[in-house]
Amino acid sequence: MPLPERGLGLALEILEQVARDHHGASAAEIARAVGAPRATVYRVVNALVRDEYLVRRADFSGFVLGTRVLELAAVVGARSRPDHADVVDRLRAETGEAVHLFAFHRTGLVVLDEDGTRPLSDRDALLGDPLRSAIGHLWLVAHPDRRMPQAPSWGSGAPTEDVRAIREAYAVRGYTEQGALLAPDRGCLAVPIHDHAARPVGAVTLSTAIGRLSVAARHVGALRDAARALAPLGSLSGW
Image (cartoon, rainbow, N blue to C red):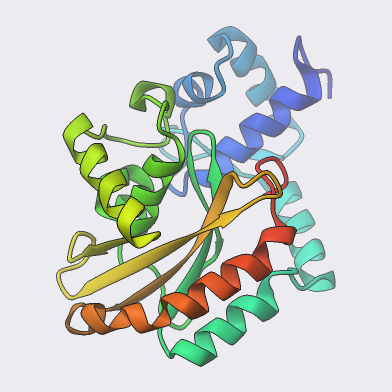
């Protein structure tokens, strides 16, 4: 597959961008997200489609992952259990609540491990608006200089006064929380995971019924223990 200019790196960026958009990303959206000229992105996308790494949606509105990527993912998944799985499974058993694991990307969030028995209440809203979730709040704390137009995964911006309030609350608690912003009956807490340089690279979150949110803080210690255990497993570039 001949690749122009940035070559393999650009192709991988494009595949990552499509993988993170569950509804299919258009070539124009991909070009904005990866910061490459549209003509270059179109050529790489067409090459990926030709080799079955990408597939055009039936309505021609965008692209989704093709069979070659999905087959590769299935092979890898069948052969390996993620390093974080034991830590996350223990936390779910200990708390009895929904626990999810996220990584921070320069443009937004990556869901690493969603609780299969208690899935995210509104995945699209969580990944599209940093103000709607505790994990989004934590991303804003971790990226104080990131302006929303530079973070294309977020569908909406965050007013300065809201971000300031989030940071002030985080400075007191050391974690973030939200109630009834994604679902009227749910709330969540998010505790950061740091890399060896003490940079936030992700988070472990706990979601619970809104009526139990006030007592969910009893699990913060367990969340922090899990975050420390997970820290060696992730980095800003590795997750």
